[in-house]
Length: 61
Image (cartoon, rainbow, N blue to C red):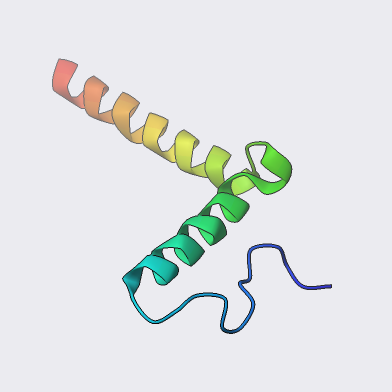
């Protein structure tokens, strides 16, 4: 069964628009599998939160 994020061959014409659309679909499928936040999105959010907290603590001290 093909992955829903994989475009069919020839689905997009030559040019950046098709590539951008395919890239957006793949990104959405990775970050929001089944329409809900996935593990990669949660890891990314936790990483950003950690960096922000550490930067704030460093600045305060």
